[in-house]
Length: 230
Image 1: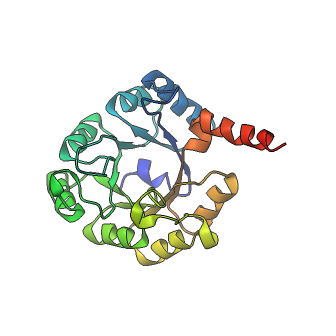
Image 2: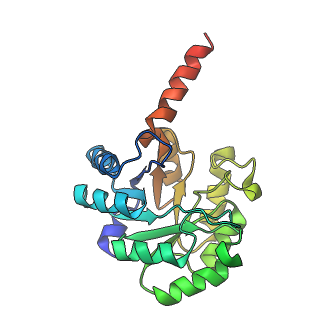
């Protein structure tokens, strides 16, 4: 692991993403968002799509966790679901490639074990992050050799319905950290500075924060909802 990645330890990674149906959907805007994140102290960026990644790399020299979100018929997996997306991210030169590492079948009915075995054989020296939704998925991703274990999908799958990463003082995160041998990246609903600090105190390698920093429509909604109650 190079110094660029080692420098993420104990630091903030900002997720700069805007989907097609969102007002900030633009590679230009995401590039400036990444620059603003760097100015604010972020030490890494998580980004979606090749065009966004290319623009972000023009604006900042921070390590990038790259993903490609793409829907395929017959599969609920949409974060870097096939080898096509992995190939594109390798070509784009991201530092870490993140992918859905839930128990759900991928396109063409492939299991995670089958798919990741193919990926690792093709790209033995690339760093991969597992986006998991349950403790069991995290332990499995650790077993099959992901370099980083993420809590990205907690609460976003049928298998994790009702789970919240912060419940019982981040119980699921604490359990994962205590049981896996690879580094754990805390991600998902970490929407206050106190939560950000706490996950690092608990032993997370680094922490990804997204919507509360980079999605102004969601931030605005929290303020407007308070006024609706008056």
